[in-house]
Length: 607
Image 1 (cartoon, rainbow, N blue to C red):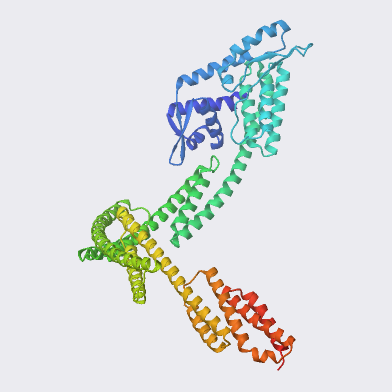
Image 2: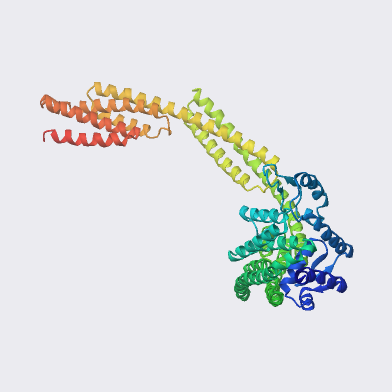
């Protein structure tokens, strides 16, 4: 009967207290029942699971409220039904098999909710024919995560729920009590609490006729309850102290960051602090309330200081924006769009740095900026259209003039390449070059105007660009034709002069041949760029004339020297000619090698 007073009676008294008061705090309930707040919390958790009592919070204070009187009466009825679940001694085989179905049907709702039931006869136990019960333990608290801990709960529930003689069942209770102590010793308080709840549940369900046996372990249960509560409080106390220490450190850091006006990081740290506060263990209501007051004060300090600093920053930057808007409107009145665009860009830079919050003021400021931008965009579009039309006409005029010069030059080039030149050929060539130069200059100006066209107007720009491409192609072809004509003309002159030099060489007049060669070289140096193959062939013929001219000039000397010296001289002359060829072809590596050989051959000549 003592257990009734210690466990069952306290639960009943708590139910009656909440039923009478309708609503009561955990602290007041503990005082009214002359017990600890931790014990009330444990009973409240159980009763809340059963749907009898509801736990609510007002600010940081937990309150208990009564849900239904019918629920309490139903629970007591289920408690009486539970007595039929236990047997005084094993039944005969036939009786036991036939009673299994009845046991499942009569299983109290309290046990069914926790997943117990479905008794099955184990056929392998032939002698004793003891029954085994397939137990499905409900999902434990989140703190119990390992499979070993879950299996431990399954084993404990299985043994406590299995029908046995009372002496064996008392032994099962003692074994479960020892398991609670073992879990407390190892720090597994959540598992210990779960097993303790199983013990008390099945202990209370034992029939009253076993009061003497129940009295044998009631003291153990009372002592176990106290020690479990103390150990949980100690564990929670250590956890609470550790978290409070971290919260205090974060609070100091948050104040420090607030003083330094680093509000973004301060807000992040405050959020970390709130998360830690939410993770504090149950109980410690007075300390939590004090800590909560400090959090509220810290939050007020952060918000107040941030508001002051941000408000001052907003005011200063709003003044800058208003001033810039005034300057921008003045620029628009002068139709100085370029200046207005630069001012708008400055406004946007300042607007992007406005502090967080102050939504209404930002919206008002944004509306003023939008009005200015719309006016600026409209004026810019209008001016851009005028500017484009003007430059479009300018570019087309330049293109047209350049094309007329290019056409005139093309006509002259055609006459020249067709060899229809008369006595005024030189004058015609000058006219061609003049026309080409004029066309190129006008083309350059047209490209410059096109590059300055305002943005947009894609279709019109594409049309002008097409005309520019066509003119560029015409000028390129014109320069190419003129270059070819010039190359052919000068090549003809060079070949004619080389034929004349050959005549002088044959006549034994090398000085005149050398004079002709100098004239040939001057014309060669004015050949148009490119045409490397043609130039190389021409250069080879020129150097051959040069070689024979030099040999003719030195013939008198060479007649008076031996064959070896003549050989060295001719070799040296050939090397010099080769060097000229290397220069022409820009083969400077071969030129270096020939130069060293020239020095060697030269040094071998007699003085």
